[in-house]
Image (cartoon, rainbow, N blue to C red; front, side, top):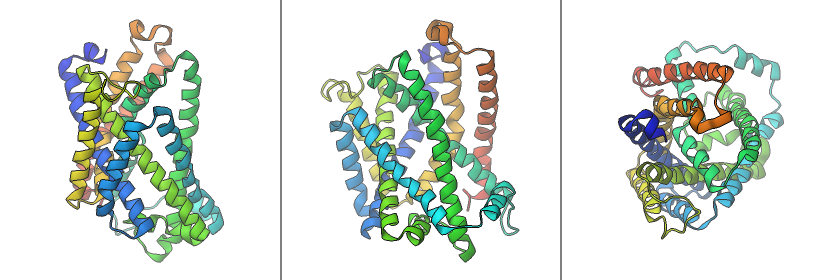
Length: 340
Protein backbone atom coordinates (compact mmCIF):
# COMPACT_ATOMS: atom_id res chain seq x y z
CA UNK A 1 0.00 0.00 0.00
CA UNK A 2 2.62 2.55 1.05
CA UNK A 3 4.92 1.44 -1.79
CA UNK A 4 2.12 2.24 -4.24
CA UNK A 5 1.52 5.69 -2.75
CA UNK A 6 5.13 6.81 -2.34
CA UNK A 7 6.93 4.88 -5.06
CA UNK A 8 9.52 2.11 -4.90
CA UNK A 9 12.53 4.39 -4.31
CA UNK A 10 10.97 6.24 -1.40
CA UNK A 11 9.77 2.96 0.12
CA UNK A 12 13.25 1.48 -0.32
CA UNK A 13 14.85 4.45 1.44
CA UNK A 14 12.32 4.07 4.23
CA UNK A 15 13.16 0.38 4.53
CA UNK A 16 16.93 0.94 4.72
CA UNK A 17 16.74 3.79 7.23
CA UNK A 18 14.13 2.10 9.42
CA UNK A 19 15.88 -1.27 9.41
CA UNK A 20 19.27 0.27 10.23
CA UNK A 21 17.84 2.18 13.19
CA UNK A 22 15.87 -0.88 14.28
CA UNK A 23 19.10 -2.91 14.25
CA UNK A 24 20.75 -0.27 16.44
CA UNK A 25 17.78 -0.39 18.80
CA UNK A 26 17.86 -4.20 19.01
CA UNK A 27 21.56 -3.98 19.86
CA UNK A 28 20.90 -1.34 22.51
CA UNK A 29 18.07 -3.32 24.13
CA UNK A 30 20.01 -6.59 24.25
CA UNK A 31 22.86 -4.59 25.80
CA UNK A 32 20.38 -3.12 28.29
CA UNK A 33 19.29 -6.60 29.36
CA UNK A 34 22.93 -7.57 29.83
CA UNK A 35 23.63 -4.43 31.90
CA UNK A 36 20.63 -5.13 34.14
CA UNK A 37 21.80 -8.71 34.68
CA UNK A 38 25.32 -7.44 35.41
CA UNK A 39 23.90 -5.12 38.07
CA UNK A 40 21.97 -8.01 39.64
CA UNK A 41 24.80 -10.54 39.52
CA UNK A 42 28.12 -8.59 39.45
CA UNK A 43 29.08 -10.67 36.39
CA UNK A 44 30.33 -8.61 33.44
CA UNK A 45 27.64 -7.69 30.93
CA UNK A 46 29.69 -9.22 28.10
CA UNK A 47 29.02 -12.66 29.58
CA UNK A 48 25.29 -11.93 29.62
CA UNK A 49 25.03 -10.64 26.03
CA UNK A 50 24.73 -14.08 24.32
CA UNK A 51 22.40 -15.26 27.09
CA UNK A 52 20.17 -12.24 26.57
CA UNK A 53 20.15 -12.74 22.80
CA UNK A 54 19.28 -16.42 23.17
CA UNK A 55 16.32 -15.83 25.48
CA UNK A 56 14.96 -13.02 23.32
CA UNK A 57 15.00 -15.40 20.35
CA UNK A 58 13.47 -18.22 22.43
CA UNK A 59 10.55 -16.08 23.60
CA UNK A 60 9.95 -14.67 20.11
CA UNK A 61 9.99 -18.19 18.71
CA UNK A 62 7.87 -20.00 21.31
CA UNK A 63 5.64 -17.54 23.21
CA UNK A 64 2.33 -16.25 21.89
CA UNK A 65 2.21 -12.62 20.83
CA UNK A 66 -0.34 -11.49 23.42
CA UNK A 67 1.61 -13.11 26.27
CA UNK A 68 5.03 -11.73 25.34
CA UNK A 69 3.56 -8.24 24.93
CA UNK A 70 1.47 -8.11 28.11
CA UNK A 71 3.77 -9.89 30.58
CA UNK A 72 6.75 -7.67 29.83
CA UNK A 73 4.54 -4.59 29.91
CA UNK A 74 3.02 -5.43 33.29
CA UNK A 75 6.38 -6.24 34.89
CA UNK A 76 7.76 -3.01 33.43
CA UNK A 77 5.36 -1.16 35.73
CA UNK A 78 7.83 -1.98 38.52
CA UNK A 79 9.63 1.15 37.30
CA UNK A 80 7.01 3.03 39.31
CA UNK A 81 9.52 2.38 42.12
CA UNK A 82 11.30 5.55 40.95
CA UNK A 83 8.17 7.59 41.67
CA UNK A 84 7.71 5.92 45.05
CA UNK A 85 11.38 6.53 45.88
CA UNK A 86 11.02 10.21 45.01
CA UNK A 87 8.24 10.62 47.58
CA UNK A 88 10.22 8.64 50.16
CA UNK A 89 13.21 10.94 49.67
CA UNK A 90 11.02 13.89 50.69
CA UNK A 91 12.46 16.60 48.43
CA UNK A 92 11.65 20.29 48.57
CA UNK A 93 8.83 20.14 46.03
CA UNK A 94 8.75 23.88 45.36
CA UNK A 95 12.48 23.94 44.68
CA UNK A 96 12.22 20.87 42.48
CA UNK A 97 9.34 22.38 40.50
CA UNK A 98 11.30 25.62 40.15
CA UNK A 99 14.27 23.76 38.68
CA UNK A 100 11.98 21.99 36.19
CA UNK A 101 9.99 25.05 35.13
CA UNK A 102 12.89 27.49 35.10
CA UNK A 103 15.95 25.48 34.05
CA UNK A 104 19.37 27.09 33.96
CA UNK A 105 22.45 25.96 32.10
CA UNK A 106 25.62 25.87 34.26
CA UNK A 107 28.40 28.13 33.03
CA UNK A 108 30.66 25.13 32.48
CA UNK A 109 28.20 23.53 30.04
CA UNK A 110 26.89 24.47 26.61
CA UNK A 111 23.18 25.04 25.86
CA UNK A 112 23.69 22.98 22.70
CA UNK A 113 24.24 19.88 24.84
CA UNK A 114 20.78 20.31 26.33
CA UNK A 115 19.25 20.75 22.88
CA UNK A 116 21.05 17.59 21.79
CA UNK A 117 19.50 15.57 24.59
CA UNK A 118 16.12 17.18 23.93
CA UNK A 119 16.25 15.86 20.36
CA UNK A 120 17.41 12.47 21.66
CA UNK A 121 14.48 12.28 24.08
CA UNK A 122 12.14 13.25 21.26
CA UNK A 123 13.55 10.45 19.12
CA UNK A 124 13.22 7.98 21.99
CA UNK A 125 9.53 8.84 22.38
CA UNK A 126 8.67 7.82 18.81
CA UNK A 127 11.14 5.37 17.35
CA UNK A 128 10.43 3.87 13.89
CA UNK A 129 10.10 0.33 15.24
CA UNK A 130 6.98 1.30 17.21
CA UNK A 131 5.08 1.98 13.99
CA UNK A 132 5.96 -1.44 12.55
CA UNK A 133 5.41 -3.29 15.81
CA UNK A 134 2.05 -1.83 16.81
CA UNK A 135 0.55 -1.80 13.32
CA UNK A 136 1.64 -5.40 12.77
CA UNK A 137 0.55 -6.31 16.29
CA UNK A 138 -2.95 -5.09 15.47
CA UNK A 139 -3.05 -7.70 12.69
CA UNK A 140 -1.49 -10.37 14.92
CA UNK A 141 -4.24 -9.78 17.51
CA UNK A 142 -6.93 -9.40 14.82
CA UNK A 143 -8.04 -5.93 15.83
CA UNK A 144 -11.26 -4.49 14.47
CA UNK A 145 -13.02 -1.12 14.72
CA UNK A 146 -14.07 -1.89 18.31
CA UNK A 147 -10.41 -2.05 19.37
CA UNK A 148 -9.65 1.54 18.35
CA UNK A 149 -10.91 2.83 21.72
CA UNK A 150 -8.51 0.52 23.58
CA UNK A 151 -5.66 1.70 21.37
CA UNK A 152 -6.44 5.32 22.18
CA UNK A 153 -6.54 4.55 25.89
CA UNK A 154 -3.15 2.84 25.62
CA UNK A 155 -1.70 5.96 24.01
CA UNK A 156 -3.42 8.53 26.23
CA UNK A 157 -2.50 6.64 29.41
CA UNK A 158 0.76 4.96 28.40
CA UNK A 159 2.60 7.96 27.02
CA UNK A 160 1.85 10.30 29.97
CA UNK A 161 2.78 7.49 32.38
CA UNK A 162 6.07 6.98 30.57
CA UNK A 163 6.68 10.73 30.74
CA UNK A 164 5.99 10.79 34.48
CA UNK A 165 8.38 7.89 35.03
CA UNK A 166 11.07 9.74 33.06
CA UNK A 167 10.52 12.83 35.20
CA UNK A 168 10.71 10.68 38.35
CA UNK A 169 14.05 9.22 37.27
CA UNK A 170 15.43 12.69 36.53
CA UNK A 171 14.04 14.08 39.78
CA UNK A 172 15.57 11.25 41.84
CA UNK A 173 18.94 12.00 40.28
CA UNK A 174 18.51 15.72 40.98
CA UNK A 175 17.67 15.07 44.62
CA UNK A 176 20.32 12.46 45.45
CA UNK A 177 23.12 12.62 42.91
CA UNK A 178 23.36 16.24 41.80
CA UNK A 179 24.07 17.66 45.29
CA UNK A 180 27.03 15.26 45.50
CA UNK A 181 28.35 16.26 42.09
CA UNK A 182 27.73 12.81 40.62
CA UNK A 183 27.26 12.76 36.85
CA UNK A 184 25.14 9.80 35.78
CA UNK A 185 27.06 7.65 33.31
CA UNK A 186 26.00 4.09 34.19
CA UNK A 187 22.92 2.07 35.09
CA UNK A 188 24.24 1.43 38.60
CA UNK A 189 24.18 5.17 39.27
CA UNK A 190 20.63 5.52 37.95
CA UNK A 191 19.25 3.13 40.59
CA UNK A 192 21.20 4.60 43.54
CA UNK A 193 18.34 6.91 44.63
CA UNK A 194 15.92 3.97 44.72
CA UNK A 195 18.37 1.91 46.78
CA UNK A 196 18.80 4.84 49.21
CA UNK A 197 15.06 5.35 49.60
CA UNK A 198 13.73 1.79 49.39
CA UNK A 199 16.67 -0.37 50.42
CA UNK A 200 17.11 -3.85 48.99
CA UNK A 201 13.42 -4.34 48.30
CA UNK A 202 13.22 -1.13 46.31
CA UNK A 203 16.37 -2.08 44.40
CA UNK A 204 14.99 -5.53 43.54
CA UNK A 205 11.70 -4.06 42.34
CA UNK A 206 13.37 -1.46 40.12
CA UNK A 207 15.78 -4.05 38.68
CA UNK A 208 12.80 -6.23 37.72
CA UNK A 209 11.27 -3.17 36.06
CA UNK A 210 14.44 -2.34 34.13
CA UNK A 211 14.92 -5.96 33.05
CA UNK A 212 11.28 -6.23 31.95
CA UNK A 213 11.36 -2.92 30.08
CA UNK A 214 14.55 -3.72 28.19
CA UNK A 215 13.51 -7.33 27.54
CA UNK A 216 10.10 -6.22 26.30
CA UNK A 217 11.67 -3.61 24.02
CA UNK A 218 14.13 -6.23 22.71
CA UNK A 219 11.19 -8.50 21.84
CA UNK A 220 9.37 -5.67 20.07
CA UNK A 221 12.37 -4.51 18.07
CA UNK A 222 13.32 -8.06 17.10
CA UNK A 223 9.80 -8.69 15.85
CA UNK A 224 9.85 -5.34 14.04
CA UNK A 225 12.95 -6.41 12.10
CA UNK A 226 11.02 -9.41 10.80
CA UNK A 227 7.88 -7.36 10.12
CA UNK A 228 9.84 -4.69 8.21
CA UNK A 229 11.60 -7.05 5.82
CA UNK A 230 8.76 -9.56 5.39
CA UNK A 231 6.13 -6.94 4.59
CA UNK A 232 8.39 -5.10 2.16
CA UNK A 233 9.36 -8.23 0.22
CA UNK A 234 5.97 -9.91 0.48
CA UNK A 235 6.99 -12.85 2.67
CA UNK A 236 4.64 -14.76 4.94
CA UNK A 237 5.01 -13.18 8.37
CA UNK A 238 3.68 -13.11 11.91
CA UNK A 239 3.39 -15.33 14.94
CA UNK A 240 0.01 -16.47 13.67
CA UNK A 241 2.01 -18.74 11.37
CA UNK A 242 4.23 -21.59 12.46
CA UNK A 243 7.99 -20.91 12.03
CA UNK A 244 8.14 -23.41 9.18
CA UNK A 245 5.40 -21.48 7.35
CA UNK A 246 7.11 -18.11 7.87
CA UNK A 247 10.73 -19.25 7.69
CA UNK A 248 12.18 -16.08 6.14
CA UNK A 249 10.39 -13.95 8.74
CA UNK A 250 12.05 -15.93 11.55
CA UNK A 251 15.44 -16.06 9.81
CA UNK A 252 15.39 -12.26 9.52
CA UNK A 253 14.84 -11.96 13.28
CA UNK A 254 17.57 -14.48 14.08
CA UNK A 255 20.02 -12.66 11.79
CA UNK A 256 19.19 -9.32 13.42
CA UNK A 257 19.81 -10.73 16.89
CA UNK A 258 23.08 -12.36 15.83
CA UNK A 259 24.35 -9.08 14.35
CA UNK A 260 23.34 -7.20 17.50
CA UNK A 261 25.09 -9.72 19.75
CA UNK A 262 28.20 -9.58 17.53
CA UNK A 263 28.31 -5.78 17.77
CA UNK A 264 28.05 -5.91 21.57
CA UNK A 265 30.74 -8.61 21.72
CA UNK A 266 33.25 -6.04 20.43
CA UNK A 267 32.95 -4.27 23.79
CA UNK A 268 31.07 -1.24 22.47
CA UNK A 269 29.28 0.71 25.21
CA UNK A 270 25.55 -0.24 25.15
CA UNK A 271 24.64 3.18 26.59
CA UNK A 272 26.38 4.93 23.68
CA UNK A 273 24.58 2.63 21.22
CA UNK A 274 21.31 3.61 22.89
CA UNK A 275 22.09 7.32 22.60
CA UNK A 276 23.01 7.01 18.94
CA UNK A 277 19.96 4.91 18.14
CA UNK A 278 17.52 7.48 19.56
CA UNK A 279 19.31 10.37 17.82
CA UNK A 280 19.16 8.59 14.47
CA UNK A 281 15.53 7.76 15.25
CA UNK A 282 14.88 11.50 15.31
CA UNK A 283 16.65 11.81 11.94
CA UNK A 284 14.51 9.08 10.38
CA UNK A 285 11.17 10.11 11.92
CA UNK A 286 9.97 11.92 8.76
CA UNK A 287 10.45 8.72 6.75
CA UNK A 288 8.11 6.95 9.17
CA UNK A 289 5.65 9.75 9.83
CA UNK A 290 5.05 11.11 6.32
CA UNK A 291 3.80 7.75 4.89
CA UNK A 292 1.36 7.49 7.80
CA UNK A 293 0.08 11.00 7.12
CA UNK A 294 -0.30 10.20 3.41
CA UNK A 295 -2.28 7.02 4.07
CA UNK A 296 -4.41 8.77 6.73
CA UNK A 297 -5.61 11.14 3.99
CA UNK A 298 -6.42 8.39 1.50
CA UNK A 299 -10.24 7.91 1.42
CA UNK A 300 -9.86 4.72 -0.62
CA UNK A 301 -7.85 3.11 2.17
CA UNK A 302 -9.29 4.82 5.28
CA UNK A 303 -12.95 5.17 4.26
CA UNK A 304 -14.95 7.12 6.84
CA UNK A 305 -11.89 7.30 9.13
CA UNK A 306 -9.95 9.56 6.76
CA UNK A 307 -8.34 12.60 8.40
CA UNK A 308 -10.35 15.79 8.59
CA UNK A 309 -9.05 19.36 8.57
CA UNK A 310 -8.53 19.53 12.34
CA UNK A 311 -6.48 16.31 12.48
CA UNK A 312 -4.52 17.35 9.41
CA UNK A 313 -3.77 20.67 11.08
CA UNK A 314 -2.41 18.91 14.15
CA UNK A 315 -0.56 16.44 11.95
CA UNK A 316 1.07 19.26 9.99
CA UNK A 317 2.21 21.02 13.16
CA UNK A 318 3.73 17.80 14.42
CA UNK A 319 5.35 17.20 11.03
CA UNK A 320 7.09 20.60 11.26
CA UNK A 321 8.40 19.70 14.74
CA UNK A 322 9.63 16.34 13.43
CA UNK A 323 11.40 17.97 10.49
CA UNK A 324 13.13 20.51 12.75
CA UNK A 325 14.31 17.72 15.07
CA UNK A 326 15.48 15.59 12.12
CA UNK A 327 17.47 18.45 10.57
CA UNK A 328 19.00 19.50 13.89
CA UNK A 329 19.97 16.04 15.20
CA UNK A 330 23.21 15.40 13.30
CA UNK A 331 24.62 18.96 13.61
CA UNK A 332 23.90 18.92 17.35
CA UNK A 333 25.61 15.54 17.67
CA UNK A 334 28.71 16.90 15.91
CA UNK A 335 28.77 20.22 17.81
CA UNK A 336 28.41 18.57 21.23
CA UNK A 337 30.50 15.46 20.55
CA UNK A 338 27.42 13.28 21.11
CA UNK A 339 26.58 15.12 24.32
CA UNK A 340 30.03 14.77 25.84
